[in-house]
Image 1 (spheres, rainbow, N blue to C red):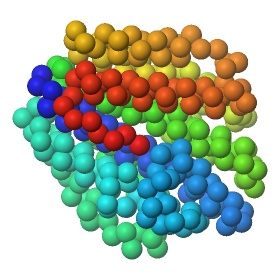
Image 2: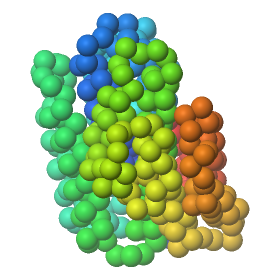
Image 3: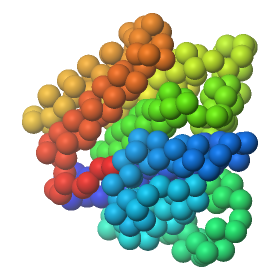
Length: 313
């Protein structure tokens, strides 16, 4: 596959997945902001979310101090970069347009339709509405695109590169969303721990999975186990890294052996990881290590396969 085509397909997958990650992160913090607490506590929660998602410098450059209202609009509708949900969907559509010959017509129509609908959301009107409708729409369109991708695309290198992009982004996003909750929980927020972790599970579409697996009260150690180490949950870091490693093995070339080895090393660390590593006072360091490793793998993928370096939040 030409490196330019691989570049567009890889980033198409990443931007679709990133839009959904941002929607889920927005869902978590918005639900928490509705619970009884002062505006300073709400603002602190948004600050933690922006920081963990890598959006805080861009937010402060445009809006200054973090308050209790503006961050939701910034995450959802900022039109000046690819850091917002709107920006991700725009970038995904542009990458799809660039490789219309390498993806199926159904994939293009789904992505183009998503972008046309996204342009119809008025940020000022949405400010007066419950963002839940927009969040659900983003999740639905991302899931629809993945379904069309899996159901129509030939299992060739293009499919593998999209799998690599989506899986890397999902692993990174899950680690960051969990990290944001840890930061908020350790910051003395007025929101009780049970509600924080329950809201996180609902926003990640994992609450039913948690109940099936553990059948006990929601506690952070079990939430971390589900989000990080479980291979049977589709949104866990381990599951995503496993898919990343599988995709890299499909597209491997002579210069990507070290990239494949590092992805395999991270996959093995998660596969053989012990629950003791996920106790709350150790979990943050564990997640930070995962994010650093994923960013290193991303840089190596760019060097090994792609034509241009994209900035990764």
